[in-house]
Image 1 (spheres, rainbow, N blue to C red):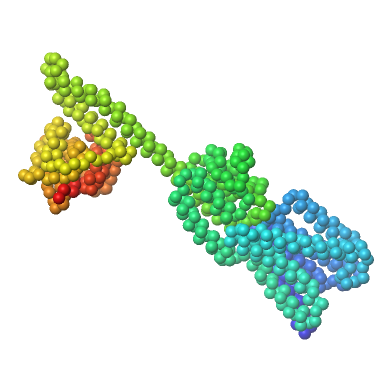
Image 2: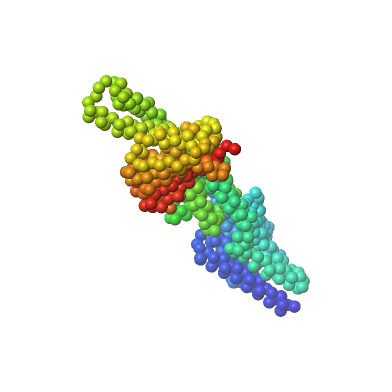
Length: 586
Ligand code: ADP
């Protein structure tokens, strides 16, 4: 049995040595205070475990092993509270007090030459010193255990699991030491069981302190799914930048914890705040420290604040998370998540800004269209009126030269008037004020009137009209119906050579009346046909022909408002055929 026990003792020592080695390696891989203190705590414990086996020897060696044991014992505790400090920082004063107390107790223990075991004979002062050492050490293990446990409350899933695991790890350390110390005092069988328990705890400690990636992912899963959904909503449906920033803060806090948070825009103003007064947040933003951040958008710590840079189109902004006393400051994994998150938020904020700019431009364009068309209409009516009077001789005789140019001037003013009319109708449509005044009319007659109305504009072409002998009745807005036909005719003339044929066909086809306008002009490519009916769209190679790019859009909208349609068939170089349909009255 004693051999088994001796073997188990060696196994405990070995397990501890391995754990210590892995913490040292972890620290060597990434040298930060957190890993350093953990390595200190575990290594000190491992040394203590070895050292305690050698204790009880006489003379100087004996004394030395006791002193080393005392130091490593206290150091293991100190390492652990400082490890806790790196997650959940103490106030500066508390940290100093703990350091001083541990140092003082160590000095006292050394000065009083404590015995190898509390059971050995010792003086009253030595008893006090032993109690002080054990009390300090117990505090150093209990404080992190309780703090990590409490800090886990109300945290998002991943933080909670991780903090609880660390808390359990601290408790595990305590258990191993207590079990290890007690093991010797039981009968061999119980001792063996206790040793086995101690060995079993060691790998669990490793997992608690260095959770593998798969485990972190498992912890994160519930939040991750929610975050993905939330991000989707956040980026697609946030009305304005303030709302987006506000929602982003809620999730940032869920990702890393924090007492408060705020978002600074590229111009240094605040976009959103959460649990912090705008004045305090503005103060921080004014200092502009958040602009001096690490490379590649890496989050950086400025005092108690975690600054996540937002590389916005307009300049640098930042999301700042203010850590509180119980905020765990997490490692690379979480920082990387936060960085990815910041990239999404940046894209979202930029998109909302762009959207609002586009909307503002749209408004400006509509306003301009409305104002310009209404302002132009008055003067043009006067000009057209006087030209017509001059032409008719109502203002007296004019020279033959003037008389000869009057028809051209009248036709040009008709063209301008026609454009103004399109613009007015278009702005009405945009503002939702284009209400149809439908009545039952004969489409054949209406089309003839429309052709008459553009006679001057299309005078240089051969227009042939193919119409049925009987009337085709339909419920339409006569003025708007004519706008469509006139537009198709004037386009046919504008985009085909002078003297070429334009065929107009009026037909009844089942339940619809249709007007087809066919030209032998330049035609429209398939690609251009796709965007022909959009607002302000003009095909590039025809910029020398006058136009607003509103006609076809307006015409199609009018057709649709009548429950009809406007479609095109066209071949480049051969010509185009536009077909306008409206339902007929039964
Ligand atoms: P615009 O005032 O420029 O004529 P429209 O909306 O009526 O505006 O037409 C849009 C564009 O479609 C025109 O700029 C022209 O390039 C093309 N287009 C329209 N009708 C024809 C046609 N019959 N033949 C060739 N191209 C046409």
